[in-house]
Structure formats: structure tokens, C-alpha cells
Amino acid sequence: MNILEIKNLEITSNNGLVLNDLSLSIKAGERLGLIGESGSGKSVTALTVMGLLPSSLTAKGQVLVSNGESEPIDVILAQEGSLNKIRGDVVSIVFQEPLTALDPLMRIGKQIEEPLRRHQRLRGADLSDAVIATLEEVKINNPARIANAFPHEISGGERQRAAIAMALACQPALLIADEPTTALDVTVQAEILELLDSVVARHNMSMLFISHDLAVVARITNSVMVLKDGEVVEAGSLHDILQFQTNSYTRELVASARQLDDALNLSSLRAEHDK
Amino acid sequence: MKSTKARASVPLIVGLTFVGILAVTALISYFWLPYKLQDMSGGRLSSPSLTHLLGTDKLGRDLLSRIMLGARIALTVGFTSVCIGAIVGVTFGVLAGFAQRWLDESLASVLDILIAFPTLLLAMLIVAGRGSSLASVIVAIGLGMSAIVARLTRLLVKRVLNQDFITASRASGTTWPRIVAIHILPNIWPTLLVNLALQFGLAGLTEASLSYLGLGTPPPNASWGSLLQEAQATVLVAPLAAIAPGVCLIALVIGVNLIADGLRGIGDPTLRSGK
Image (spheres, rainbow over the protein chains, first blue to last red):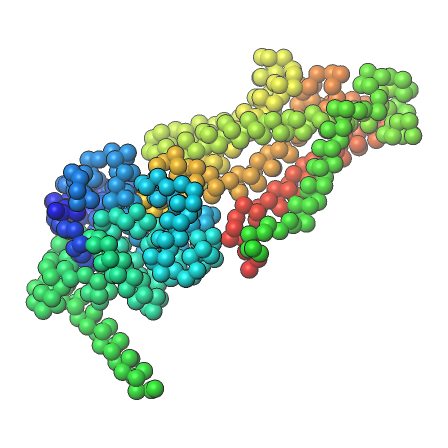
């Protein structure tokens, strides 16, 4: 059964078309990488799935979200009340910049409590136990300390782990990751990717992974869709895209990812050599 | 935990001392006054002495007793009108903060017009309609303040609503009323609190102006404003009758300004960390 099915999604703003005729589907446990430069329409796609499209944009088409058991909900037609039932419970999102995605005046633990309190109706000791368990799930050291800290008191990597914990708290069927590693430094990036990979695999979640970087997407998904200026220019398995890309933009993406890979290999070889 | 301890600053302590002395004086006035208000046994315009610490006015009434009563009136007006201003202003401000497009623009213009309308004039109209009483003064000052508080609240709410963490919180299924309670109010209240503290002092000042014009609390109640007005004719003979209420007014306004200054850092944990 499809966890997410998008049919002929079209998003328009006052200035014209933002996204043209996007269709995709993700089954339980499947992962899809959505690649494109900024302005290609990948983030508005994510916001549409969450039902959080700004009022300046209008969406047409069908976006069906389901937890695999219940009847799918069309996010575009759904009212705020039914959207709030699936947000955080059936589908969650991790944003690019954890510092601004967390309320600066609220302790981390309190922010993770919110979805648990609403969707699982946990209270008191059960609630604080669930918060600690969620923080342990995202491999945060000393979860009790982090739960009690404000966002500015912890490191960037810990903040993104906390934001992931907030998204994962209710173990949604679908996790959307919107450039989750772009704001982090390279070593932390690798850790966060590994974390997302393992958590999503452990709970057999589906994932929509959004990035401008093919090298990052390649580490975590096996099928990709390439967007440029609101159009789908290429879609298929990662293997096919790397081997037989037909579109010139995809070719550039692959080339730059290869360059980065080569550079990394070279520097790790040098590091080996220096030892 | 070092990081969460609020450090009381020097302005806060000085401000609290000023306002504290006035508040204690006002409280004492409920239980004990050196002389009854109508007691005219002191002899006209007598100088300060052990029997009349601040001397007497032109009718032979004890000035200290009248100043103490004035403190009670100033603080009562300040406190109650700030309560009205906070409740009415914050409620309308939050609602206006959520309004969009034409509704938002018309609400903003209504607030601007209300603010342009002088509080003194509003007070005169209310007093003309209802007769001069303490309640009229409080209603007039409270309503005038509501518009100012509502405009500030609206701007603060709009600023918070644009933050990423609101989107992130909505993405985990938080309802709008809950977002107001856990994200918006905590984020706007430090700024609001500082503003309300300033409004407290201004309310005391406006009450004095109204009483000076004869629109305030009716005799025999003695407001600092009416004391100043009465002392005006005899200021060269008995300057203390004008100086004493003047000093009290200045102490109130400076006191709440210092408190407002000291409060600035306290609501914001990012300023608290002592880094």
C-alpha cells in the first residue's frame, strides 16, 4: 500500500508556476530522494505533503497520505483539524536549520513532549519516560541533560538530533527530511545521515529525502527524482541515474557528486599516507 | 543550575526600592493615616514640624496624610489600568496578529487611529459622560492603554508567526490555540512585560494630569495631581506642598522605568546564560 501518493501535483504562486505535474508514490519502507537546486520546487512539495503550504501558494492535484492501514487522506482538500491528526503522527518533517526550527524559549524536552501529548495522550511520568526514550533513540548523549536544556545551550548536531527526535516521537509512517544536513558541518552530516538511515530502517518507515546534493542522497536512498525549475527531469533507481542519465542537468549533478567523492577519497588517501 | 538563575540587576533593585516604598506607603494608608482627611486642625500652611512632618495645606490639612492617600490612588490606577490594558490589549493584539490581508490592514488602521486619539481627551469624554470618579479615570486610562498594547502585541505576534519553529510545531500537529499558549505568549511576553511596566508609570502620570485638570478623583480624595494643583497658588509661600507630590510622581515614573529596564533580560534564557 502506498504511504504517500502524489498525482499530478501543480503548485502556482502569483508569479506563475512553481511546480508542474509532479507524480510519485512511496510504499511502506521505501525511500525516495528528491533532488534539485533551490527554487526547483522540492521544498514546496514537502510543505504540501505536510499541509503547510503558505497561503500565497495554491496546490492542485492529489496528495494522498496514509499510515498503511487507514483510508488515505487527501492533504490538499483536508481541513486543519484532520491535518493536525496526521501531522507528527502519520507524517513528520525534519527541517534544514535546527536552530530556527526549535523554539528558543522552550526546553528541548518540552518540545518533544508536544506530539506525544497530543497523539499518544501520554501524561506525567509516562510522558517524560517517552521523551527520554525518544532522545535515546536518536543517540543523544546524556538525554536527561538535553531534555532540560534550551536550544542555544546545546551543539548544532545535538539540536538536529533533537529536531529529529521531535519528528520521530510518534513513529510516523512517513518521514520527510528537507535538507536535514545542509546546515551542519561535514563530520556531523555523516553522523546524522547514519542516524536517519538506521532509525528509518529499524521502524520500517518510508522516507522522502530532499537535497540539492546527489552525493548525500546516494548515501541514504536507492531511488531518486530530479527536479529543475519545477519540472521533473529524471526519475528512476539511483543505479540507473548514475549510469545512464539522459538529462544534461542530471549529468552535471552526477559529475559534481563524482568530483566530491574523488576529492574525499583523495583526502582520505592522503590522511592514510600521512599516518 | 547556573544558567537558569536570573541575576537581579542594579536598576531592577533601585526601581523596586522606589516603587516598593510607594507601595508600602499606599498599603499603610489603608490602616493608618497621621490625620483624618477632613481634619483641618493643623493651621493653614504651617511649616514641617514634628506634629505635621510635611506641614499642612491652605485649609490646614496634614500634607503627609494626603500624600499617602495619593500613593494609594496612583498605584491603584496604575495597577488596575495595566490589568485592563493587558487583558484587552493582548487579546485583541493576538487576534489581530493572526488576521490576514484586508482584515489585517483594516485592524492595523483602526489601532493607529485609536492610538492617535489622546488619552486625556478620551478621559475627558468618559468623565463628561459618567461623572468624575476613580472608576472613570481607570476605564479611560485602561482603554487608551489597550490600543497601545494591542498594536505592540500584533507586531510581536506577527514576528513570532514568521519563525520556522511555528511551522515545525504545526508540522507535529500542534493546534493554533496551543501554539498561542506554548510558543507565542512565552515569546512575546518579555517585551510586553517591559512595555506594561512603562505603561504603569505613564498611567500614574496621566491620572495626575487628569486630577490636576479637575477630572480625576473627586475631593476629599487627594491625588498627587490635585495636590499639585492646590499647591500652585501658594507655591512661593509653601513650596513643599508642590515639591512633595512632584517628587513622589518622579519616583514612581523613574522607579517603573528602572524596573522595566531590569526586567528586559529576565524573560529571555538566551540572555540569562551569563556567557
